[in-house]
Length: 310
Image (tube, rainbow, N blue to C red; front, side, top):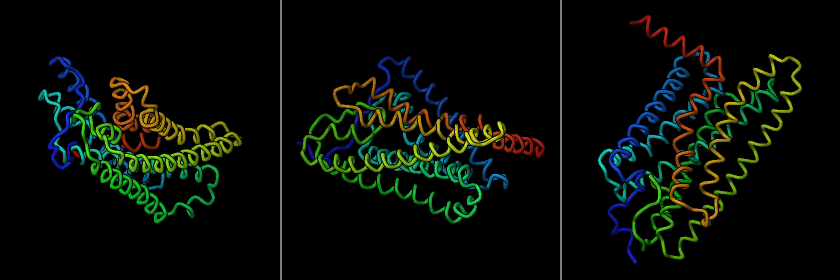
């Protein structure tokens, strides 16, 4: 049995064996990464610069874009560098940092999506109490709670995961370091501690999921009672983007972490990992900007002002 302290590096799963396909993977991920940086960067800049967007909904959207930027920057650059330089290695400390960062940002995003569903519930079902229930201080506290929950979750899981003795080859069946892949390398019964933490985490995640579903059930009832078609369209336009993001994030992440080990294949795990770690940060800006006329107008105004200054 090998001691974890003696490990200097792990080997990540390559996307391809041939040099041509490795370079194709590099350019494809580079395009996705740049698109995510541009989209989320524009949303952050637009919300920060436009005083009309300093509302709870856009405050949470700004936090979501920050989390998306951090999440995709945690996984893609290392994978692209490995493909470009034809290597698979990641250092022990680099793997621990990657696992911590991704867990922190992913859980914080899930908690923030839960908070955003509450924001939409109050805005549509209790509009007269919106400013009272979602004042600036309350918004900051809820966002801070989401970030703090992600940090605590990542700290506990990273410390526990990397304290396990590893006795197998240090090759991971994934293009980045994640908790299930590290657990596969352990041959100690102490991994039950991590499984216990994951069960508790699954219960908390389920509670958040139930809260989101109940919020949108109430939202749907309230929207259907709106007499004007224009009012219903406006309400749906603010809720559908968030619902699409939540559905994508939860469905892919749940399948990746809750599926039985009997259907665990490297190719399937790889596809699922891309769907929940790469796709949401890249498409979230597109989803929100396509359905949000106010955000698009502010973005056009910001771009036009930049051109006028030149």
